[in-house]
Image (cartoon, protein in one colour):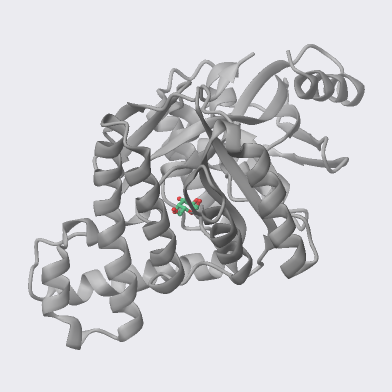
Length: 384
Ligand code: GLA
């Protein structure tokens, strides 16, 4: 048991008493394939060694008592009073409970203490770690017999319907399906997935958290989704078989360019190209060609900045600064954007220089230090 698990368990015992089950639920990285999941495209994520630990015990009644160790905040409710809270964090737990109840699964109240080292709002999907972790826990505690795919879907539904962010399935899928030293290419239409080796002997995944948090992130995210849907509806007039941008080739899109609102056109171009980049990046991994892989990461970032417009000056600066460090293969913003973090692939001996240079550049331009985390690809949600 690591220090965080010990701390969370101790908090649970102080708050609630009894013997909890401990669950480790990781944050994710995504090597490439951003804003493609809700367009039924491809993504390439993995679970990490940064995790939320949940300590839980079922109750005999319908009360729910939560304690967030990292904020030192309590929240109490009951299964028939689940509604959004001004504290926000309880919504990730409440949302999952609500979705389980509405789907008809038999659960009771529970006591939960949780805490971890996934940067909150930092682009590594701390929210999906809580949701996926609780979905996994409910299945375990109440013997529901659900497979991980159902759990991922329920966790996503909690985020979509209760929290209100219309996210895709990538985060929960990575959280629940992760394997050590492997990334997964997920086909977000069929939900078929394939693991690709990602050995971490000579290479490190470095997350640079800009510490920028934008309130507008969720509304802008939902707007991007609508813009993609607008693109699909336009093309559907000509090609009724099209269901999502996944079905559209660049040449088809370009053939109708003049009919598009320019901003919608740009969004569609990005998504179509990003899907192609994921497919090519998987080939790069098979051929162990990290130089080419890294190049696609830079291209992905440029697309996110110029076509999808979800970057911000701080993230652009982090990527630019990373690109100047010898030993960096590639770098891009990761996650939804509008703040949060970048992901860089760095040769192991170059990590120290990376930290020094990128921190110095960032400090000089913004007056702030980025938070830099070196993470490993690890197993998905599990009981510890
Ligand atoms: C967030 C969402 C994911 C995905 C990414 C962008 O992390 O939760 O579903 O859409 O943004 O790739």
